[in-house]
Amino acid sequence: MPDMDNFKEAAAFGVGTPQTTVGYPLKGCASLDWGVKNRLARIFDPADGRTLMLACDHGFIMGPTGGVERIDLSIVPLLQYADCVMCTRGVLRALIPPTDTTPVCLRSDAGTSVVTELNDNVVIDPEDAIRLNAAAMAVMVAVGDSRFEAKTIANLYHTVDIGARYGIPVMGVTAVGKQMTRDARYFRLATRICAENGANVVKTYYTEGFETVVACCPVPIVIAGGKKIPERDALELAYKAINDGAAGVDMGRNVFQSEHPAAMIQAVSAVIHKNLKPDEAYQMYQDLAAAK
Ligand code: 5RP
Image (cartoon, rainbow, N blue to C red):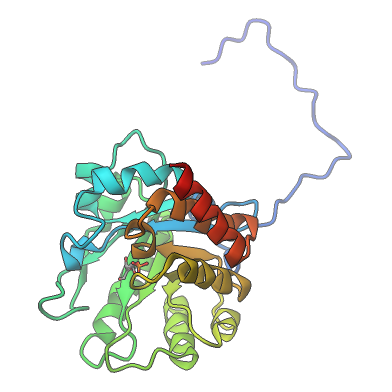
C-alpha cells in the first residue's frame, strides 16, 4: 500500500481542459492496439513516420555473404545509426549485445537456403519473438509462386494472429519468384495481398510506378535495397522511394557492402529523415568517408 501520511488531496482535475486524443501518424495503423502502435513507434520515428531499418538477416538463407561474415564487427557498430535492425534470432542471441536498445524486427520464418528451394518456409514459435522483446516480426510471402504462395500466405496470417494476440506488429516481405515480372502491377498485387492478410508493414522493392504501389497499399511500405549498386545510385533509390511515398527502407547490402558502411548508413538516414536529395546525400557520404 502507498504510504497514506501527508496524503495530497486530488485537485488537478483539469476541468474545462478536454483530454487530448493524440492521433497516430502511421498510415492505416490508427485502429491498432496500444502495444502494436507502441512497437511501431519504436521503429518508425513518430516525428516523421519514417524508418531506416538495417537488414542483416541474409545469412538465414545465404550463409555468410559479403558484409555479414562477422556481424559483431560489421553490423553492431552501425546500429547507432539505424532505427531498427532486422535479423534472425540466432544472430540476435549470439551477436547483438542485449544492452543495445535498437528495436528488433525479427526474421520469423525459416526453412530453406539458396542452394535448395526458397520460400518453403515455416514460421518460428512466436513465443520466441516475445522472449526476445521483438518490436516486429517479419515473414516472407511469395505471391505468384505456384508452389509456395498458399504456404507463405498462411505463414503470414498465422504470424498476424499471434502478433495481434501479443501486440507485436508483423511485416510482410514480398519475395519475388524468378518467373514474376518485377513491375508495379506485380508489386501492387503482392503488397496489397500482404496488407489484406493483416501485415502492419510491407517490405517490397522499388519499381517504376512505385507511387501507385504505395497509394493502394493501406499500410506503410519500406523498400529493400536489393543487390549492391554504386552508393550514389542506392541513395537515389532511397530518395525516389521516399519521394513516391515509402515510409522508409529496410536496407542491407547497399549499406554493409559499401566501402564505407558507417558513412553510407548516415547518408541514407539523412535522405529518409532530413529529406536530403541524392546529390546532397552522396556529398555527405563522401565527406563522412573522407573524414574517417
Ligand atoms: C529478403 C529480405 C532481406 O533481408 C532483404 O531483402 C535484404 O535487404 P537488401 O536487399 O537491402 O540487401 O528481407 O527476404
